[in-house]
Image (cartoon, rainbow, N blue to C red; front, side):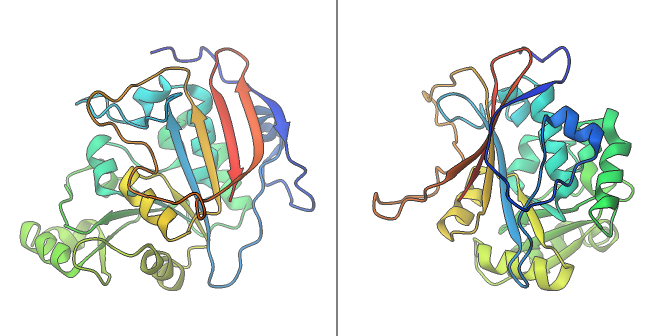
Length: 287
């Protein structure tokens, strides 16, 4: 891996953001080399943002024990982690599938977990944005209910978690964790026998939890479901300068979606950034 020695971003292209107000402080704007702003939320229609790191050939996970997280793809790149932390700071909820939890054990989906040295700045940003909680809601999606409640995300002070699952998945959780389930997390049962409908996910997060900005960090199955349902407004992609190959199947973020040339989603380029040292690219697209 080739982590950057220090964090510094340079903006190569920035779309005119019009009247959108920069959310970042002077310090964070300097580190990001520019503004970061999102459109206003529409009532009952949360903004949904995706974020992934991938190789040049589109691989988002090596799917090798101990090397399955995004950090193994990015090379623990500091700029990638900084952007991820910024997005988590802006989000009301970070949503991941159970597979992502298994691939990255011990992870907690908060800004300071991924970039601790700027923890106070991220808390100040959330306060400036009017976020009611110190951390974004951590949402785990599992149709089967196969989730290890011993993971750190369920025991970190100040981090609220909710598991979205099916009736069968909830029965499994209640059976496996009869005495501890209610003590460590909240479960919410949605329609569906195996896979949850993203429209139901977005609806319950908005109506029950007041979520207006959802950050979707995957994995591939969950994000593909959102793409199929046309439930993604923006996409942040870090492109790492390496090639993964696919001799053994390795996921890309849309591998569970299938589109025809006539209905494939198109995106417009919003931002292109690069590090002062290294060859990563940091891209922002709007659907």
